[in-house]
Figure 1 (spheres, rainbow, N blue to C red):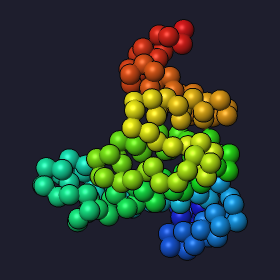
Figure 2 (cartoon, rainbow, N blue to C red; figure 1 turned 180 degrees about the vertical axis):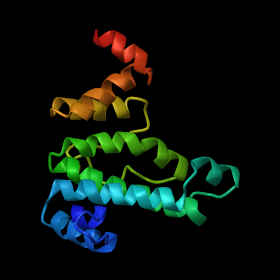
Figure 3 (cartoon, rainbow, N blue to C red; figure 1 turned 120 degrees about the vertical axis):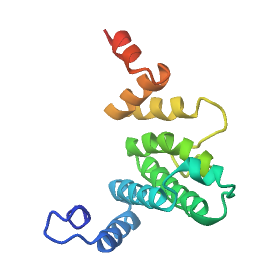
Length: 165
């Protein structure tokens, strides 16, 4: 599926890649859920390329490209949550990363119970990203460690490097 998606096999066919990923996800493949989540995010960016545009043009989250972006973000979250439930730490990292987009576009990422997503919910408080990054880091995710450090330092990369030394 990844060869079809990238075109490395000589043919670029995103629709066919999506079908293969969907089949694999149906069989419980966490990596396929990650790929489908990433494809949904790509669709969200195409549907609503600028969060600012959708807010400044007076559109509500249920109309126009902002609504399509919100639907795609919610679909991505479902796949990332499924990957997390299957033990894939990148699902947790992706859930934390897309929270800001979900708020801007009105997507509901909180669908599903904690049990269904291996505890991966996105509460309204400010600790949601830290909690998800911490869980990913605890699972051994290098990206989880990096994002956790960056989040704890308020996004200041120079501070992350200084504290690491």
